[in-house]
Amino acid sequence: MLKRFFITGTDTSVGKTVVSRALLQALASSGKSVAGYK
Image 1: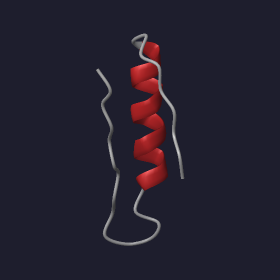
Image 2: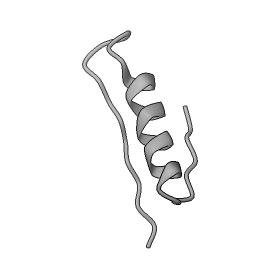
Image 3: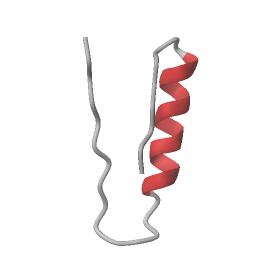
């Protein structure tokens, strides 16, 4: 099943990339196939 996440924030420099990276790493570590786009 294809699932998608959209990470958004209220301003610049609020940690969107950090959160996205951590989420991708956690999903990949659990065996999921992941891809990030910016």
